[in-house]
Length: 297
Length: 288
Image (cartoon, rainbow over all chains, first blue to last red; front, side, top):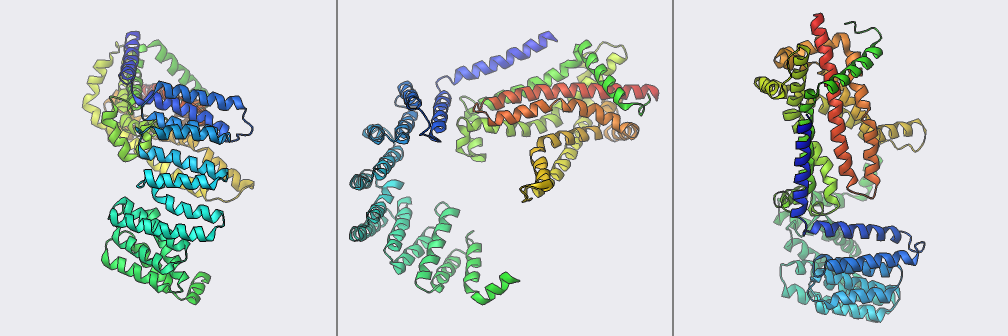
């Protein structure tokens, strides 16, 4: 019995040790360390004002040690982003930006990570109400990372900043410039992710300047050209439908929306979205009085 | 053996006797030790599944079934418990049931003053393997039906909107008491086929005859049998508490350690329960 017990124990410990040793240089250890630091950070981030300065310093030191231990790995930019967030949370925006700018100066990191840093930099300037610098950051995003989510959204965000400043003419100009920019991108990268996102932002550009008819046309093109569930996910379908209905309502003609939905159903009779569109058409075509009666019954 | 006289005394005495038998005859523990070993090995493999070299095999499956985040720490650890539970169903039907039958057969050897030989007992039971796994599958079906029934009650309780009063208390009891109710339901289903494994392992009966004997015995001693199973099962309650605590601690590895303790405790409980049931079966056999 004892022999069997120790044999099993030896096998279990042996297998455990062997598998641990085989993964000694793997990502697991790094994931564990960064998770632990992140946990400590999220704990103080819940109430940053109650947290002592030493707690922030300790976490920053831990991120530094981590970066030193895993330089050049895909964990390094993650740690840099988080380190910047620690400064950001303690409202030390200049140091936060310094960390993120340091990350941006490294060209070996992917654009997807760089734009996170850039986005945070923009947010920090927004909090400081330093809108000129925010606009500069958006221009950098457009120039350096044009095909990322943030890069694509940046022209529209510029209009949002002018809106904050109540600068109507600059806002209108920004919206017009954004519309031209998105149209160029649609031409340049047809049927791509950039095309899809550009059409979405172009829609918002038109909606932002009250150009309902043009918005409706873009939405119709978007629906007809991107039926693939890869693009037309549940969330993006919802996004498109809300805007089509909204634009049609602004034009006082909900039949415009019905026509778009009918055409989509005709073109793609097997599309999973059709069930919802049929229900929508039925709902739009039901007179308001009978709707009231239905809800009462 | 008088079953209905002071059943409480019988239960405690039988369970005490069962523990004593296990401690005095260590060869009886061997099948249970094998069960613990295999389950811990499975747990170890699941623990290392997202790390090199096992991730070569498991990464694609995890990505496809659960999503990419479950490859990374600490999400990978949250998968271990549900994955182990699924594997344990198959393990119970195909392996554990056979090991329990082997232990029961060894107890019969001891009762007949023969030298208990685990390997020989297992070989001897191989022709009855199909009946053993069918019985285990039937037991699982009972559990499944009861859990589904409880699931309906649970979902109904979720719909109770009351924030105070007896309705709220009822809702809280049903929702937070789920693991404890599941434990009782588990004890109940084990009771339903309590003596069938012994009938197969000791008397080499086929599944239908084993079930006939089982229900015959249960008709006279249901309470005793239920008590023999429920009392050891109640010892699992501290581990259920431990599981709840582990779920809210900041140490993700804690859940894995609780699983280790759960496996050992559950097999130990099974050992006591099935030894007690086999003892009752043998005593009844002698009476017959």
